[in-house]
Length: 619
Image (cartoon, rainbow, N blue to C red; front, top):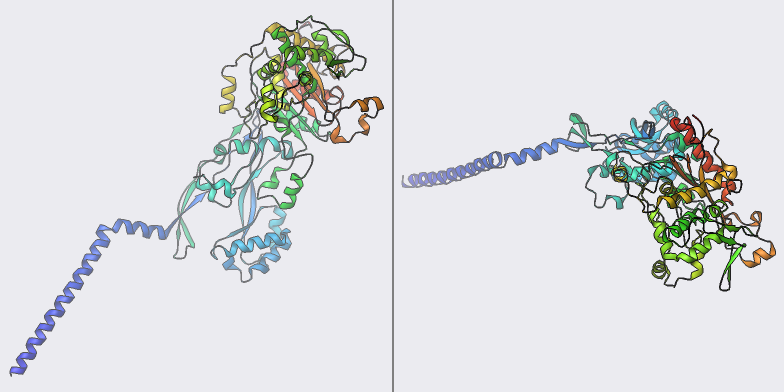
């Protein structure tokens, strides 16, 4: 009996301990549940939602680029692309081999696709090509049963209707490189199919053109596969840009220059600096860069000695030759070292110490005044003016007209040219300046370098009354607003400008002018200009004595550059042009006719000018 009571007490004690433990565990569980649902419920709800819902960026439509008349120069074309999903094909290498036979894929490209597929989850599509033609789509569709895992869908690709005609101005788009990702916070750049501007307007205005991404919220399963789209908000398309360029003028300029091995031209509106044409040959096809250029194509462009990737209109630096003589004349007049009627005798050469500096005309021009020196392009006259000036005063006035510094055009990579000074040579070459170098600088040789765009700006500032216009491309952009709000004067007397302009008028319209055969064809309209021929290879005394210096015997790369600058109409200037033909020879024979034709074309397209009578012609 006593043993029975003892067992009962032991059982009750055990039951009590067990019940207390059970209650403790249950309380802990209830407390944990309360903590998870009440205290941390919102956080875990968000985590659960992020596991269930995936947010995907939507590529915005890239902004178009239009010419001044609203015609598209760069837009987005619908295209077809092909992708492959690894989990849907039992033999990925075999499938890609068959697809490569239909599309002409190289083994290197197939290897790249295989590597990308292995680096991603099996269900993620991998891009193969994004620029399929309709014929290629049809071939793939017909062979679809043999190509498991291959997906065809639609997309967009950057389209350049004019291709090489505007490649240097517009540039191109391409995949984002690793260096370009650094310091960028825009999530669009992380998307493999996103393209950014690499050169030209596409690069300069990329932030405006790219737009803002949209967002798609899709439901995914536990392994991340898309199940359905929940909602979608489209992004903001990129901004359209309207350029100052005239497509007809650009086409004509490129066509006119295409007969030359290498050349460049710039055509400006002298009233506000708008660039109407900016041409450079040879050019390239911008579509080559859409999906990353091949090594073979890039090597071909990079190693071409004619530099097709370089926009020579504002990156090509050339000795301006006699087109620089207006700067020597202006500096001489402004400083008082000469007057408009100052006559200097040209005997065919001028001596400084033991060095003889030759005029292009062997027998000389005789006694000429300033206007005649420009008309006949007398070297000796400008040697003497430069000698009286000194290089620093000459450089000061050249810079007022836009030489020796970047014009600031809204394109990347512009070159500044060179207008030398005593301090420049000391800082650059650690050498003293020699007086003879001042003489050759006075005719645009020696260290003097300028781009075709700088020469066009110089000409525009000469003929527009001495206003500091600067070139721009994008209408409504900061560059245009900065250029056109208030034009400052260059600080040169009008009577001095008039003397120089008279000399430029005689170059084309006088029987003794060096470009007398380049008069405009447009009825009732006259032009003015200046020829230039800049030496690439120095002519030695032995060359002159031996008679060996003949153009036909000189390698192309050693021949002189041909230049011409001009403006029209002469009475009320509207357009300024500069043309450089690399190793083209004489400016009057090669560059002047091209410039004349560009001005003619601009006047024909401008009905208000072409239809107006000349100042000396009855209405």
